[in-house]
Length: 367
Image 1 (cartoon, rainbow, N blue to C red):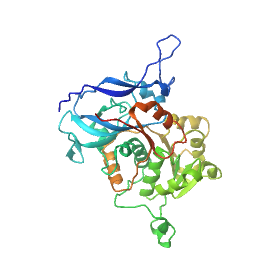
Image 2: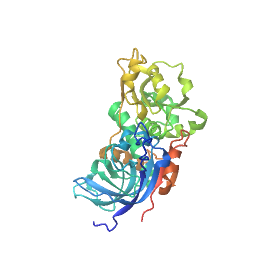
Image 3: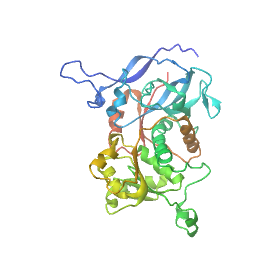
Image 4: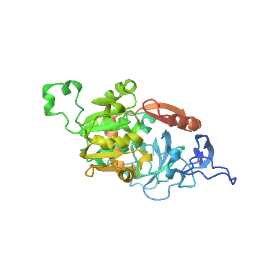
């Protein structure tokens, strides 16, 4: 399909001043939100190799701390954005399959670009690979669809790839409160205890939902039980606690997935069982195992499977997540939507720790 349009709008990081006293922006010297500018004459990216797809982006999410990520500064584009929901505009070839069917021009899709990929989604158009995209959940609008990929993929890979939990069967359902309190529940009650820190956050909310679908006993930890209890129980959390409630616990959980880092991650060594699994998805905690071992925080926990990881795109997993969403078993939450020209304000809002449930979304005006 030939496109007459050759230019697009995109949010870019305005480079630091070339003055001698100014350091170039980098992960060590991150750009401030005020450096985010909407440019109107950016060339639309071109398809260059088999498997590539050009997407007209309808919505993209704003990820807290993305201005501190090293990959943000690894290309000349200095562009942000990985989550997206949009429409297929062009494909390089006709062999791109999704669920056994070819992706075609006009298909509605969602996805996440790789950390080192070429697609930056804070733009009206983005080039993505076949593994980074799948048909979006039919029951979710653009904004809600865009909130799903990165957070849900991170939770999915933490639970099912790294922790080794069995993937949920879409025909199953979580155990209801009535069943949990009944005598027959002993036959179906979960044996594996999962603790999620930062449970009301973007990734945490999917960990809670997926944990419930997998029939784990899910303990949700957050900074305020009063503020978050209703939301966390609605996601399937079995127990809602504040971090202070965990101070007297020892060897309590089979699996701990941390989304917060810092002192809360340090305390997880005490909470995880001796042969349990401890995972963090906090981007500032990469390499924590070696650091904590050096600090003697992991003493006596040599058999714990402890790791961090960076989420990767997966068409297969995106399709499974979309199926669960279409069945009403997974929900995406929009905290607030901003127009494209308010990217700076959107990023500042996303960076606030007390942002209400859900993700911040940028909406592109489709021309």
